[in-house]
Image (cartoon, rainbow, N blue to C red):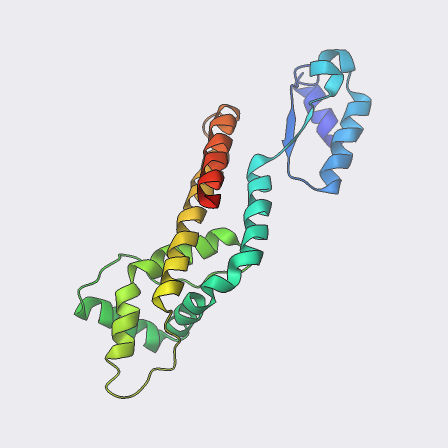
Length: 203
């Protein structure tokens, strides 16, 4: 009701082409309610395309489902990052090691939130910069074995492959989420890029 009143106040109720919202039942109800109150003659194909699902939200759901399946492949990397970010002393020791081995990524290690795939992408992207630091810290523990898990070469490669995949989804989501430029014109091109990438990854 409030949304309709706002549209009427600004004389926009007869100028709507589509309404883009996240995929949830509440939004479905809102759009259905608006359709009942708007004049169908002013809508494209009588309002058939009034309700548009948010592409960024759909991408988010796709990536989260994918990570649920392959998430175990990066557990060792997550455990290593968790170890070196657990206390200020460990963070300091890790940063000292970066300076000593002259490996400067320019960013601090961050532990991801499992419910936010973009944070997983950020964690992997930064951890991969310091792959050698993890290995050297394990090797140079002077006989005292550090109690952090070191990913195997295969696990590092899996982390890199997953990071590369997430990078494409991250760039696409950022493009779709822009606020200072039109985004509808980007949709087809970006979805085609993802489609081609999926076919390549399957091959």
